[in-house]
Image (tube, rainbow, N blue to C red; front, side):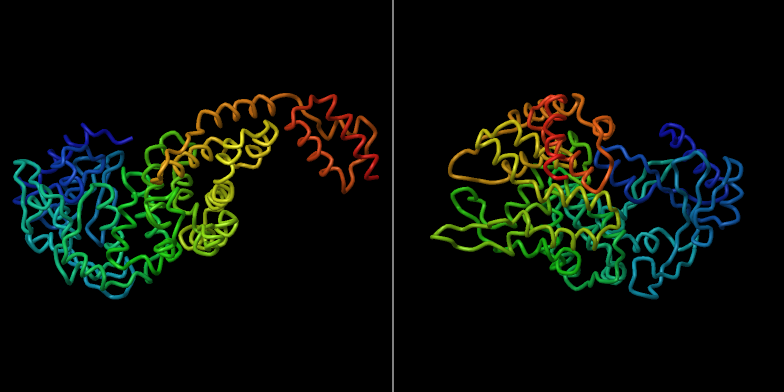
Length: 451
């Protein structure tokens, strides 16, 4: 485990040795940005100027066991250390992908030319490790102060399409606004050459680190960048809702509100990534079934209709089967808990619901976010306590002994094609509140009927 205090001591020791050889070591990138924002950063990035790669390697060998992360790119680390050390480099675009660059190490390029390859001015700041002096060639300090995301250079920024997604996730995490010229250049950059892993990585940072993940999608919309990776989300724009319950307007506005409400609850969930994606996908069916019926806007069975677009979106972003299964289950069931609570349904019905849910606790919290993520003429009841009380009853019910396959065999039944159906029937009886003896009796009677 890297030691932050030890890493800073190592950074200074490195900088002193580099200085003795006529070079300079700078903190760079997000470490400087976060430090100036008053936040701690676990990842320390250092760029070493003015010494050759051979000299830097000799220095590193005196400080620990050197690891060459990308020796041809001038990138190093030391074992058991949280410091990444790099040399200044130039990059030349040779393709359309995020990694399609030729890289040339140039220790004597100078700080301005080294920083020009950075994405945003706030990430192009450099800080002398020994003196603390901040080097700011592109106005990053002013943009940091004013909460502005501004790209460093038109040519280098446009070479990497991932930066459009990075702009959106930084805006969401830091609450910053994009400069008009940055919005303009983002609108001109196609995103189709990106890999799903890189896109998902930026999305997850917004969903799991931002207080208002909705900003991620608002920025992508502003940049005209929803189309290739998030068309199902873009389809929510303009889809009407009943104004009595959704004064916020269309399904797009509702979904963004739900995302922000979900962010307030994600630390309480068992699967935060899946939970936040479920908040995003829960109403993807509404564009497919919203209609005016007897003068009222309805989206009948949108939770079922939403499974296909939700799966399409998820499979575009990830191969994680567990994640996809979780989100689809949450999308399908997101309406039912509050509906059952509103009707004060029987315990056997909430038991059956929780038994169907892949994660009942998270489902209840998703319902809370869905309810809170809307503006209505009349306040909506909060069923969270009611549902968690019903969940407690479900847990107590399923913790009691139930009918097993061995019980059926002991009663003289031979395993056949109906065996699993009988066990499902017995489980259903248990959920309805029957004890094991009564459930077994009814299950055996059912077996006689079906034999």
